[in-house]
Image (spheres, one colour):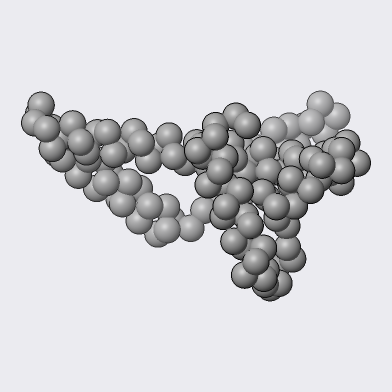
Length: 128
Protein backbone atom coordinates (compact mmCIF):
# COMPACT_ATOMS: atom_id res chain seq x y z
CA UNK A 1 0.00 0.00 0.00
CA UNK A 2 1.28 3.45 -0.81
CA UNK A 3 0.97 6.55 1.33
CA UNK A 4 1.29 10.23 0.51
CA UNK A 5 3.84 12.56 2.02
CA UNK A 6 2.55 15.86 3.39
CA UNK A 7 4.88 17.98 1.25
CA UNK A 8 4.52 16.32 -2.09
CA UNK A 9 1.06 14.80 -2.11
CA UNK A 10 2.61 12.05 -4.11
CA UNK A 11 2.26 8.39 -3.42
CA UNK A 12 5.36 6.78 -1.98
CA UNK A 13 5.64 3.01 -2.23
CA UNK A 14 5.88 1.23 1.10
CA UNK A 15 8.19 -1.70 1.70
CA UNK A 16 6.52 -5.06 1.53
CA UNK A 17 7.52 -8.47 2.78
CA UNK A 18 9.24 -10.60 0.21
CA UNK A 19 6.75 -12.76 -1.67
CA UNK A 20 6.53 -16.27 -0.33
CA UNK A 21 6.70 -19.08 -2.79
CA UNK A 22 2.98 -19.71 -3.25
CA UNK A 23 3.38 -23.34 -4.26
CA UNK A 24 5.54 -24.11 -1.25
CA UNK A 25 3.15 -22.31 1.10
CA UNK A 26 0.17 -24.16 -0.38
CA UNK A 27 1.96 -27.52 -0.04
CA UNK A 28 2.84 -26.77 3.59
CA UNK A 29 -0.73 -25.75 4.36
CA UNK A 30 -2.08 -28.88 2.70
CA UNK A 31 0.33 -31.12 4.62
CA UNK A 32 -0.58 -29.42 7.91
CA UNK A 33 -4.28 -29.85 7.21
CA UNK A 34 -3.83 -33.52 6.29
CA UNK A 35 -1.81 -34.12 9.46
CA UNK A 36 -4.42 -32.39 11.63
CA UNK A 37 -7.14 -34.51 10.01
CA UNK A 38 -5.16 -37.71 10.60
CA UNK A 39 -4.52 -36.83 14.25
CA UNK A 40 -8.18 -35.99 14.71
CA UNK A 41 -9.28 -39.33 13.30
CA UNK A 42 -6.60 -41.28 15.21
CA UNK A 43 -7.46 -39.72 18.57
CA UNK A 44 -11.22 -39.86 18.12
CA UNK A 45 -13.12 -41.68 20.80
CA UNK A 46 -12.14 -42.97 24.18
CA UNK A 47 -10.35 -46.22 23.30
CA UNK A 48 -7.06 -47.16 24.91
CA UNK A 49 -5.31 -46.75 21.54
CA UNK A 50 -6.66 -43.21 21.20
CA UNK A 51 -5.41 -42.41 24.67
CA UNK A 52 -1.98 -43.85 23.86
CA UNK A 53 -1.79 -41.77 20.67
CA UNK A 54 -2.71 -38.63 22.61
CA UNK A 55 -0.06 -39.55 25.18
CA UNK A 56 2.51 -40.07 22.42
CA UNK A 57 1.79 -36.62 20.99
CA UNK A 58 2.03 -35.03 24.44
CA UNK A 59 5.26 -36.85 25.29
CA UNK A 60 6.82 -35.85 21.96
CA UNK A 61 5.97 -32.20 22.67
CA UNK A 62 7.44 -32.53 26.17
CA UNK A 63 10.56 -34.24 24.79
CA UNK A 64 11.10 -31.43 22.29
CA UNK A 65 10.72 -28.88 25.09
CA UNK A 66 13.16 -30.77 27.28
CA UNK A 67 15.72 -31.08 24.47
CA UNK A 68 15.47 -27.30 23.92
CA UNK A 69 15.99 -26.65 27.63
CA UNK A 70 19.02 -28.97 27.68
CA UNK A 71 20.50 -27.21 24.66
CA UNK A 72 19.89 -23.79 26.23
CA UNK A 73 21.52 -24.95 29.47
CA UNK A 74 24.55 -26.30 27.59
CA UNK A 75 24.87 -23.00 25.68
CA UNK A 76 24.62 -20.99 28.90
CA UNK A 77 27.28 -23.11 30.62
CA UNK A 78 29.57 -22.73 27.59
CA UNK A 79 29.02 -18.96 27.73
CA UNK A 80 29.86 -18.95 31.45
CA UNK A 81 33.00 -20.96 30.67
CA UNK A 82 33.98 -18.52 27.92
CA UNK A 83 33.52 -15.61 30.34
CA UNK A 84 35.62 -17.48 32.94
CA UNK A 85 32.76 -17.68 35.45
CA UNK A 86 33.30 -21.38 36.25
CA UNK A 87 35.69 -22.88 38.77
CA UNK A 88 38.27 -25.33 37.51
CA UNK A 89 36.16 -28.27 38.75
CA UNK A 90 33.06 -26.88 37.04
CA UNK A 91 34.96 -26.42 33.78
CA UNK A 92 36.27 -29.99 34.04
CA UNK A 93 32.72 -31.24 34.58
CA UNK A 94 31.56 -29.26 31.56
CA UNK A 95 34.30 -30.74 29.39
CA UNK A 96 33.16 -34.25 30.28
CA UNK A 97 29.38 -33.78 30.46
CA UNK A 98 28.94 -31.35 27.56
CA UNK A 99 32.11 -31.77 25.50
CA UNK A 100 32.64 -29.24 22.77
CA UNK A 101 34.25 -29.97 19.45
CA UNK A 102 34.62 -28.23 16.17
CA UNK A 103 32.57 -29.40 13.22
CA UNK A 104 34.32 -32.32 11.59
CA UNK A 105 36.44 -33.17 14.64
CA UNK A 106 36.16 -36.63 16.10
CA UNK A 107 36.26 -37.45 19.79
CA UNK A 108 38.23 -40.41 21.07
CA UNK A 109 36.43 -43.54 22.18
CA UNK A 110 37.59 -42.86 25.74
CA UNK A 111 36.05 -39.36 25.72
CA UNK A 112 32.79 -40.67 24.32
CA UNK A 113 32.67 -43.40 26.96
CA UNK A 114 33.41 -40.88 29.76
CA UNK A 115 30.53 -38.68 28.60
CA UNK A 116 28.19 -41.67 28.37
CA UNK A 117 29.09 -42.80 31.89
CA UNK A 118 28.73 -39.27 33.31
CA UNK A 119 25.29 -38.84 31.82
CA UNK A 120 24.22 -42.31 32.93
CA UNK A 121 25.37 -41.51 36.46
CA UNK A 122 23.45 -38.23 36.37
CA UNK A 123 20.28 -40.07 35.34
CA UNK A 124 20.69 -42.52 38.21
CA UNK A 125 21.82 -40.07 40.90
CA UNK A 126 19.46 -37.23 40.11
CA UNK A 127 20.79 -33.96 41.50
CA UNK A 128 24.23 -35.07 42.60
